[in-house]
Length: 112
Image 1 (cartoon, rainbow, N blue to C red):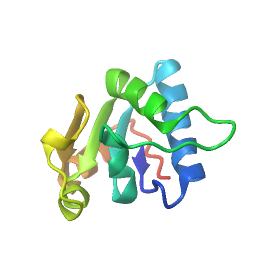
Image 2 (cartoon, one colour):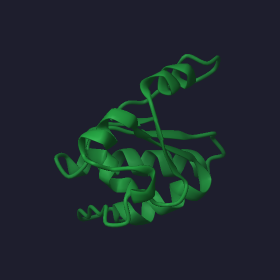
Image 3 (cartoon, rainbow, N blue to C red):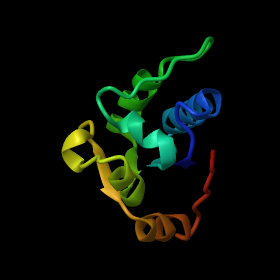
């Protein structure tokens, strides 16, 4: 799943995290790619809350232990983030890695 929204579109962002969490709970092999403003979710201070949804930090922390969480290289650099700024389990990776995963056999890509 590729998540392009963060605080700029909190409802879309939390919908994506919820879908990813349900997919993991259903036994799916999930890879989450954070781009744009969503990269902040991989930092210790990254938080979003809206009514009727678990907080982003709760969903993200669960995903960090059950899924692969990638932070866009360019997006991180534009925001001055390095690997040391991220929560344990999140890794910085480039577009080539995303394309490789997205084009693999039997992969379904969701973009939010």
